[in-house]
Length: 124
Image (cartoon, rainbow, N blue to C red; front, top):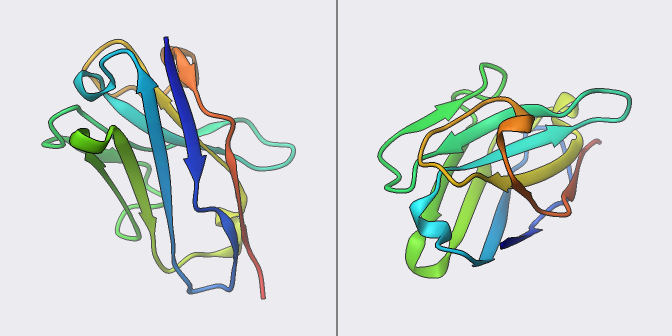
């Protein structure tokens, strides 16, 4: 089992920044790929960014490319999502997820373990 706990969400103005953290415990999290997803009210959960265990390969949704950066510190069992130039359409609950493989997947059903989510609201 892997337990994931997200933090760092909040209210920010358009153009602002936030950094989300996802702390993991349990199985060897540092050997698995991890991803960030988000879900806005009335919408399906969507892929935001993914990273392999080494951090050498990362993948982003087109909507966040150039604005968001995913990273990880395996010594701390933590994955991060730095979000810059935030837009109102980025408003959603953000979830961290991991799977028992070291490959990035963009479909939510490909991930076995999920955190409880953290709310990000972008509004003036």
